Structure formats: C-alpha cells, structure tokens
Length: 78
Length: 245
Image (cartoon, rainbow over all chains, first blue to last red; front, side, top):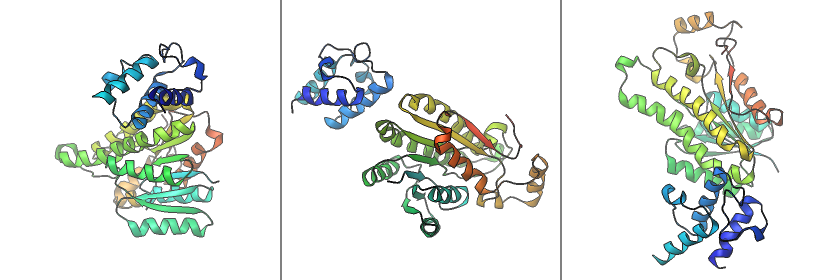
C-alpha cells in the first residue's frame, strides 16, 4: 500500500470520517474535526505504522494531511 | 466475555481486597505485585476458588519500561482492558527535617510516578476501545496533611491532581478517571502504627471505628460500574467522616 493510502486508512479509522474528505490539503482540525486528543492519537498511530518517532515540535507543524505525508516521505528519504 | 481489570500492588492489603472484590464481580483480574509472589499467587488462587478468573504479573510500577511490557502483555492476551486500579503504594515515614532525599524520591516514584507510568500506557488502548475506567487510590492525608508523611502526602495530593487532569484529557473518549481516598483502614500499612496513634486517630473518626479493606473495594466496584458512568475527575473520600471536604 502506498503511503497515502496507509495514512488515509489511519485517519478514516481514527476520526470516523468518509475517505473522500481526506484530501492532501484538508486540515485535521478545521476540515476533519480532529481535537488535540485525536491529533495526539493520530501521531502515535503514524509513529507505529511507519516505525518512527515524531517529536512534539515537528508534530505541531503537521496541520494538513499533506503535511503528514511530506513528513513521512522526508524521513523515508533521509 | 468477561471484563478485564488490572490492580497494581494487589498482593496484600487494600489491593488484595480490591482484586478479590473485582474477581467476585466477574472481572478477569490481573494481580500485579512487586515482590510478594507467594502472596500474589494466593490472592489469584482465592479469586479462582471463589469461581472467578485471575492471573499474576510481576512488575515494579516505578519502572516505565516494565509497565509498558505489562500493558502490552495484557492487551495482547485479552480483548480489552476495561479497568485499571492504581493501588501500588509505599510509606517511608519520618519528620521532614530528618527525611532522607532518597526516601522522598522512592515514595514519589512508586506512588505517583508509578500511577503516571500505568496511566500513560493504558490510555492508548482505552482511547482506542473508547471506554475504560481508571481508579487511583489516593489517601485522606492528601487532603488534610499528616505530620511525618510529607513524602507520602505529597504523592497522594499529586494523585488527586493527576486524576483531575487526566480525567479532562480522556473524557472525550469515554474514559473516566477517579480517585478513592481511604481514611484510616485496618490493613498491612496501618498495622505497624502504635496503639497510641491508633487511639488518637479513632478520636477523629465521627463514625467511631476504623474502616475495613472492604469499604474501599466496594467503592472501587461502584466507580467501576455503569452506575458511576457520569462521574469523572473526582476523589471519593471513604473515611468514616474523618475529613468531609
């Protein structure tokens, strides 16, 4: 499964929303209705899925679905 | 499928009573202990004799990694983790002026940091399953103070604050977090006190007698039950009126 599909699956599962809504420019908070606890859970799910650690200061910069994808891809290339 | 409960420090005293009460209440109980393996196994055996289901698990709650392993073990061998009772606690009494820094640290590490370690590790599975009950065993002295127990009192007041904060954090996902503050309960922890101190305590209890471990385990059963589903962030005092808030 491509990264985007994995990330989408996690978001759909965690937030209980339609997959159509999970676009790269969707904001977790404003468009997908995630609260801070949801975001903390999402970050932990992503850490598990991609076997990495996202420091708090980096996690704060992840606002949209695209930000999460970029972060994961940046780490994978590094 | 029975509900699953973890009770820390469950080999004796109040913890053993809580484990037994939950076993009778239909929970599969994980009897956590730090050093007293024989006693923990006896508690598990007594639960099974009473028709319940139990297992023992050794782990020092102050050891974050060990706690992580314990919770992993529980969540990988059971379908859910419905209830956690943070009961493990120690005393290392002495007047503040004479208290060794390491005795302060030890009590905080086990009583307060231990509860944090367990809560952090169970919060994720509980959030994921969208239900869960966390009950922290505090103490009356966390509210009224006690000469000779600065470390213990600090840890228990810390438990009350931890309870309220975590209750707010986990509430949106249906996880409740409460504390129970026992007053003077006849148990291993209070057996060591002198008759003189016991008499002085008795004078301060309006109901006129000491509590039993059952008084605490009944309160745990209540807070764990559906009847208490709208209660979170509270410290329930069970003390015969010794402190009334």
